[in-house]
Image (cartoon, helix red, strand yellow):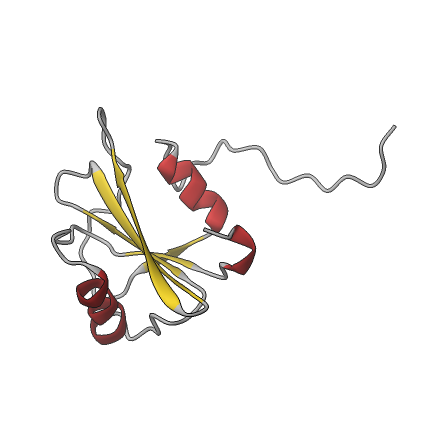
Length: 117
């Protein structure tokens, strides 16, 4: 996954049947979310047990489908089920994948260095 090409990250709130593959997940993005699955966004889906994720990503001429299964623990996943997805930042996705809360309040703020001492 090339982080430089990702513009947005969307979480599908609630649980998704992860037996769906690329076509089924792309249909959810297009028909339920009213979003373009061919955009440079990541679309993230979680199972009912919150221990498995699938990420759908269009890249140039085809889809990527990433799959992550936790051996222990669960993902901090928004449980409310809405037809619209929750948009988060790529940084928040990294927190989520690392087992942290995607909406944590104690993260270090971004630093832009001006020069090296």
